[in-house]
Image 1 (cartoon, rainbow, N blue to C red):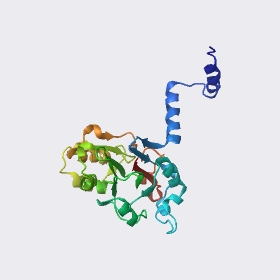
Image 2: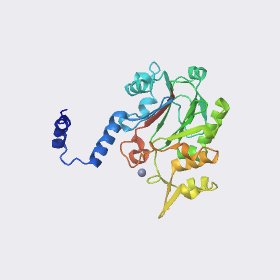
Image 3: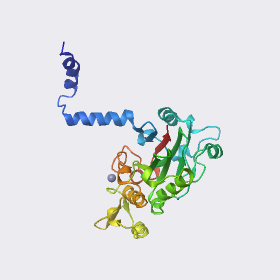
Image 4: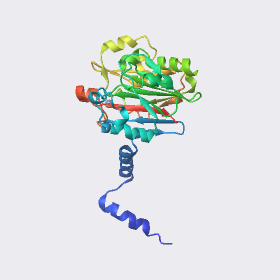
Length: 280
Ligand SMILES: [Zn+2]
């Protein structure tokens, strides 16, 4: 057997990358994954897309779609439709509140136009129905009821989080599908994290009565930093979501990592990343 062919194939790489180490290889693989696979969580029952700044989505564009067009007329959403095998997609008009709604085939017909119905979470048990939220530092939280095959997508900024929006989403899932917290898997998307998420005393006052507050509020000098995903994890654990149910793989800090949109870093001109989840 001729064993020289791998050497022949790899030699050009050694010329291109003369100081090629295992760390370099890991970094390159990570980079390739980031650019080509994107942040797509894919399992037989569930697909989740965690977008980033490369999608180039701006509120001015998606809030002003002409009535004769729909989201699937915009190239970014066409790509998403194919990657996630979506029949339909719906985004709420986010208002930093705690309300949400059930996307059934009936309600979808009534509320079929994205960004028109005020809400900060959506739930469904219909397959190939994309539930979307837009964020730029706020936390996207995907809840997956593994027993009843139902999902929620929650837009959990700090305002909605301190009003316990994740628990309101579970209440809605329990009402519609009989969801129990112990059957949930929880995926946190990209958000501002405790390294960068400086907040005011007013936020701390609103959560002072929760147990384990020290786990989610850090004081550094005169500044206060808030652990938004950690706070939502505390809330979810308090109603019986299991500690092993939480997936933090996609929870990158949007402020530190400039491949994401960040209101803190980019200000008024910040782009948005979308998180879309669908049952398969
Ligand atoms: Zn950070």
